[in-house]
Amino acid sequence: MSMPTADYLRFATVALRSYTTRTVLIVLAMALGVASVIALTALGEGARLYINNQFATLGTNLLIVLPGRSETTGMNPAAMMGETPRDLTLDDAEALLRSPYVRRIAPLMVGSVPISFSGREREAVVLGTTSEMQPIRRYTLAQGQFLEAGDASRSGSGCVIGSKLRDELFGPNNALGEWVRVGAWRFRVIGILAQQGQTLGMNTDEIIMIPVASAQALFNSPSLFRIFVEAKSHEVIDKTRAEVRSILTQRHQGEEDITVITQDAVLATFNKIIGALTLAIGGIAAISLIVAGILIMNVMLVAVTQRTAEIGLLKAVGAPGKQILQLFMVEALLLSLLGCVIGIIVGVVGTAILRGAFPDFPAQTPTWAYAMAVLTAVGTALLFSYIPSRRAAALNAVVALARH
Amino acid sequence: MIELIDVHRDFQVGDTVVHALDDISLTMTRGEYVSIMGPSGSGKSTLLNVLGLLDQPSSGEYRLNQRNVTTLNDIEQATVRREQIGFVFQSFHLIPRLTAAENIELPMMLAGIAPLERQRRVRDALQRVTLTDRAEHRPDQLSGGQRQRTAIARAIIMQPSIMLADEPTGNLDRHSGMDVMEILEALNQSGIILIVVTHDQDLGERARRKIKMIDGKIVSDGP
Ligand SMILES: Nc1ncnc2c1ncn2[C@@H]1O[C@H](COP(=O)(O)OP(=O)(O)OP(=O)(O)O)[C@@H](O)[C@H]1O
Ligand SMILES: [Mg+2]
Image 1: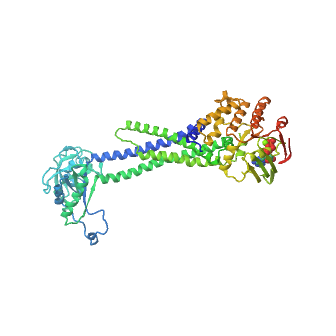
Image 2: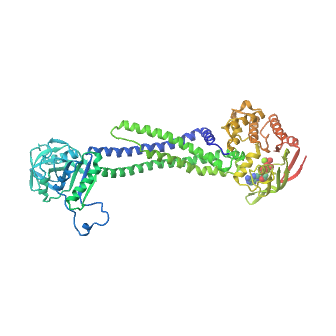
Image 3: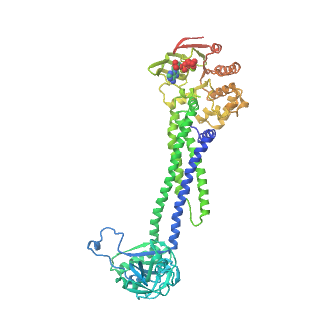
């Protein structure tokens, strides 16, 4: 016959109730720790979701093709012979439209060139691309229009500039229709991008966009920096990637010398980084639970001292040391569970209030954070109550009974 | 049946050794009523603690019902205490946050006895110590005599064969002291070995067998 769990819980509950202040204090400390794990990880997870949403506004279903293989598996004979990877060309880009999964493509060339207008000069990033880049990257215009649609292999003289570049070159004057000098060439400003700031590591406010064929002439090179590919839907991203690979490999005489990255893959990296950060934040919050654990240990040590006579009596009426250890540890367990319940309620309510105050920020506690909070709370409670409980169990019955 | 054979209990206090029990041998059989008297520090409580397995002899052997209990481990000794021995202390040792009924129930709870059976036995025990109407009172709501009667009810709840009482009336007035003694003696009538440590000459005289101790030795033992 062993003592039923219900009796352990009842005995512990009655004991905890008789030390109200102490019990409330510990439960509060535990609850605070649990609540902060829940609230802080909600912030981290919120940041992750926020960034995912930002990515979504950048253009979904996006694949980016770059020259060269990045995921080299094993030996690469081309690299060993000192060959550089084959260039990506405009024809390569256009060939991708053969795939039924591809909605649109836009080639991209990038270079840094001095730009000037009536004596004012500065260095700017020049992007060579086509009209299709606008829907792919969701560029919005403050004024004028985007690059003209048409044959990508034909150069043109229209350019689109970022808002900051506009301010620097033209100041308060009208820019639309003016001719700017880009290197040795001249382009007419046909559009000005709406202010957008930093997206994906490039500040679009400071760039100038020209037709890709003009860029090829300007940079005196046929090779593209990137090809942007938009798949018809999110479901066919993987198929699109395979098709892009096979089309380009075919065009490159069977050599798979390109890399296709998907937005999903980029996002996955971001998610991994922020996920790790969230875990770290949650871990730091969990440390407060360990502090609560130390509090439990102190309070239990005091309890053992105060209840020495009771422990002696328990021994006299037939409780072995092991059972006394359990009685005390159940008290600690109850304290931590109570702290968990209250902490979860406070954390969840707090997160809901946060969401109400900042509707754009999707604060949301990840499931693992609940598990982490509860396991840490219960784990530290058991760990730190073990020493006091063992001390209780090891008390000399005669000495204990002499105290009251 | 209780047998102590050449039992010593020494305490090291600083440089000196105190012989609290100095070569004690004695036998007690079913239904005996024994009083232990002697001056303060003569080893009466120590003897009771050894008999109750709360304390271990430094040397010698303690046999309880033909079984050597000196060499038992913690769990086995706890079981013997639970099943064979009832304690009554001068200071009652009730748990203050529990009601009288819950205090009486405690040994059964620790033993894992089913709740229904516990309730039945608590009711019987309360009746036996005439405290039925105080079942739900906490110790601070009880008089000294009622507290000691609660403690006795707790001591008999596991139906022990030995009752050890260390100055059971020490904190009580004469009248409640007599009540308590009568309850203990009634238990003895039903076959339990009753051992009472007391300073009270009159109480000591009530026992059929009187042991006198001085300096850890039994100096007289007889009717
Ligand atoms: N834990 C201990 N450590 C050291 N000495 C002890 C301990 N317990 C008892 N003693 C000593 O053993 C001797 C016997 O003590 P015990 O408590 O048995 O006496 P007693 O006869 O019960 O006295 P009283 O009538 O005052 O209760 C005393 O000298 C006491 O000081
Ligand atoms: Mg004594």
